[in-house]
Length: 493
Image (cartoon, rainbow, N blue to C red; front, top):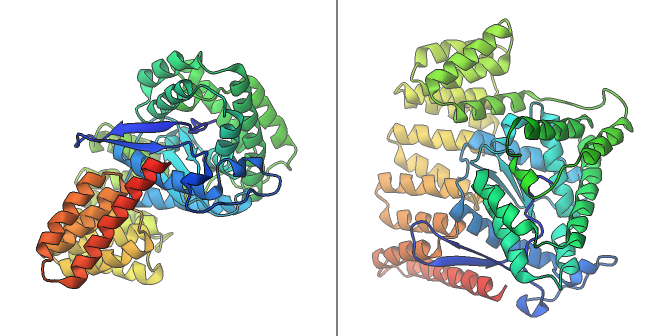
């Protein structure tokens, strides 16, 4: 499918950019002795006896840390929350027994998404440009959820117990390249290792894809989307291969033959016509944000969105929103404010529009006004991620560091595995002069991105500052012990 990181076997070893040491994560756990507890296989699920659900969760947690240490992620809180909500909207309609534990938004223009054992879903922000309607984007995610629910990783391990580990390692390395760097490097890596994969393994992968297509379509429709979203997305993928000398990244690891497009189209015909939603307003707004993100300059983006707005006769909400955020990025705050007023007349409590209004005021040097606006919106939507993150920026720009600290400390309880929250909290601690807290927050950030040496160094600085404070010293010692336990877990897997 869409460059899904299955099958995973052997050990993924990478090197941190700023460190000399290599970090490794073993993604094939085949022995019960490697787990603290023995899980009985589920009835009818032979793969559970080879890779348990707990092992998959551990793999997912560890892989996420390693992945973040190597790959740039998109920290836009609005886009992050939108994609998280979309995943969590679809997951109850899939065959997953629990919601995915992590959604990673990758900073990469390529058309790609992937799933990792244990409930990790990765989505390239470039996928927002390829999907022209929300049902198309939802079809990709629904497909990934099917891979997770059917535990294709564990089934792949079972089927490949006697496979050549060097060949599997080579393919895994190529898949990671395609999922991160992309481009010709990914193509060359895949081409160089594909011949080493046995034909029966390829057949097994195609069977997984067919199963994920079928179950993904069910999830898509049950969640209220147009079933035609899946064949439309497949057709868009094939169209990309016709007009581009290299295919989208997901096609480097998973073929998309014409038969799969036909199968998806025929399956969609089994559902009532004109059934389900194709688009939501939030999809259009987030797509505008991604367009701005990848535009050559804010000035070019202003011209682009203004042309789109004129082509729609001034009726396109998404084009006007794109114009607002492009004008803001171009420091044309008065023009941005005037355009935004047109949108606020219809949806005054929209979170993306509230964030846009606050960012205009922050950019214009009026953070107090932005903070007041966001405070009112948070009263309506307590704990909202993008509102909280922008509110903390407004408070920081206004010099109210203690309020920003308190806000973000509370937010870490809601999003303890979000590196961006810890990073921003460390910055605010520094401005507030709370140096011990700076080191502790930085340590949490480094733990989440798999930079354990850096985390230990930050905690070491904290220990020096905490001398004589028994409680703080105990907390730091406990966190150092946690890091050592993670290291041991990585070595045992």
